[in-house]
Length: 115
Length: 115
DNA sequence: TTGACGTATATCCATATGGGTATACGATCG
DNA sequence: CGATCGTATACCCATATGGATATACGTCAA
Image 1 (cartoon, rainbow over the protein chains, first blue to last red):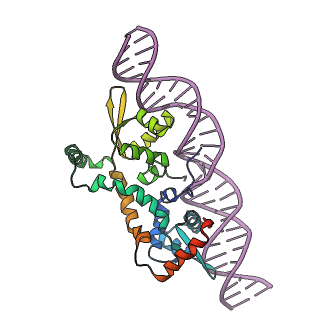
Image 2 (cartoon, chains in turn red, purple, cyan, brown):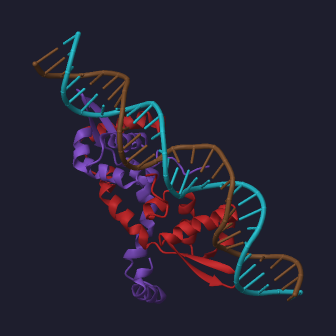
C-alpha cells in the first residue's frame, strides 16, 4: 500500500499547509476561488485542487453564485483531530511535572537550535 | 513537488493512523519495540519504520537498554497542531449558533448518507 | 566462539501526491 | 451570437510513501 490519500480524513487533508491556510482564510467568512487565489498567492488550479480535497473530507461547502463559486468552512470534521490531540495537551501545559521532565525542559532550551 | 515528507512535521507524521496508535500506546509509558509490535499486531520492520518517523519529528525519544531500545513519547511537537486547531473548536461546540447554521444542521441530517 | 535475540536497514512495489501548464466548461456581458 | 470571465479538469512529472521480505548489526547467553 502507499500513503493514505489526502482525502481519507481530516488528518490527511490538513497535513498540507496550503490547505490549512485556505481554512484559515475561510474562517474569516465565505470566499470565492479568486479571493483565495489572491489571498494565498497560489495558482488558481492549485487552489481548486486543494478545495476539492477539502470538499471531499467535508471541511468546506460550496455555493454557486453566478459564475463564481463561494466556499465556506465547516469545521466539524476537525473534531476527531481535536479529540485525539487534546489528552496530550498536558504534555506541554502540565504545571506539575516530574523532576526529570523539568530537567529535560531545561536541557532542551540549551540546544534550542537542534530542531 | 510531491507530497511533503511524513518527517516534515508533526502534522504529517501524525496523519498516519498507525503512528497515532504507537503514540497512544507510548502514552501508557515507555515500551520496547517488541512491546509495540505485540500491542499493535504489526510487522516489526513496520514498527521500526514508523518509530523512525516519530523520532525524526521529535515525538519520541529512545533509550538503549541492553539489546532492547526503549521508546518514550514526547508530546511537545503536537503543540502546533493543538494551537492551530483549537480556534476551530467553537465550530462544533458553540452553544449559540446563528439560525442558518442550525437549519444547516437539520438539513444535513436528512441527506446524511451523502458523505 | 557460537548462536539466539532485538532491532534497524535495504530492496522492491503500487500508488497518488503537489505543482505546472493547457484546456474545457458554464455563466455573464456586449 | 461571440467574447470574456471564473472555475474545474486533464495531463505530465518527480517524489516518497506504507507494506512485505530478507538481511545486517549489536548484545547477550551458553
